[in-house]
Length: 119
Image (cartoon, rainbow, N blue to C red):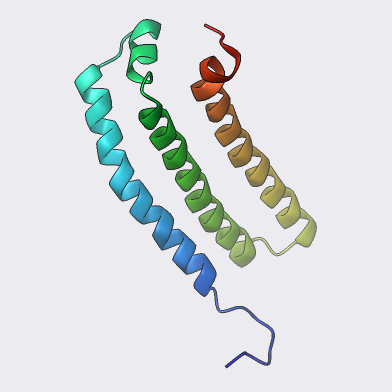
């Protein structure tokens, strides 16, 4: 039954938070094993580590899940504790730009060689 008050129950946010937590719980141990097994100390080591496409995709999906997880948490904090609408909008936009920019930046770093053939 739909609420007559028009307020949202937060079920979607709760599900997104839990889904991204599951992705992080599954992906982070795999990434940690890969990092610890390779122990890259220089640029060549990092390039060798991320040579397999599946590892680049896993890293990007993990960071995207982390960004979504952080977004839901920060948005809820801002809605609960920042009462001035203009300040809340500014903070929300700053978080969106920071998180989205970080994910895009990582995607460019991980896939620049495959897309543009740069070294």
